[in-house]
Length: 181
Ligand SMILES: [Fe+2]
Image (cartoon, rainbow, N blue to C red; front, side):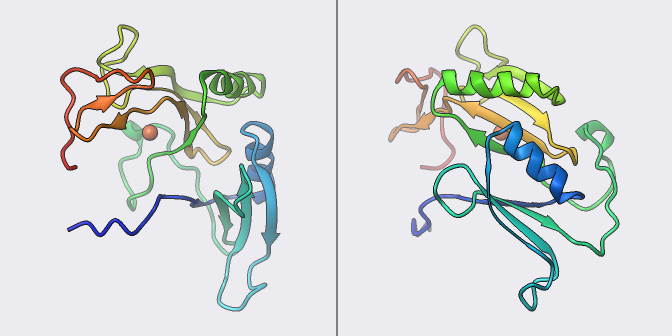
């Protein structure tokens, strides 16, 4: 039985091979701000460098972790080439409130010559421009300096009380259902 006590998912934390490079990328391309950066063992029992970055006024939404003792390898950029190793994350996603904002990010991505691995794409089997997939949102997927896949999207569908998905225009999306309400 769900207890419903957790309000939302909030920050994401991942390893980076070069903290300076990653700070620059998340600042310049995606508009994050640097809250604070700390060295390994600054606090006993924290053996890694931690960098806290934010989009709004919460202390952090993104935590960059760097282990100075670790030898980092390049991760394969395509899932088709990533055939061996421990489970890792596939992507994380950043949300824009409006299409205008989303287009600003797309522009920034192009201006900074960032590698785009998918999109811009409309995830929908409902609107004619859709790719046949799920969620009713518009997205672009890029790679950060370590090859981590980052999605930037807007207009993700909401789940109605009847389980029918509702797009950003407030339209019920025919044929949709929800596994668990
Ligand atoms: Fe996604």
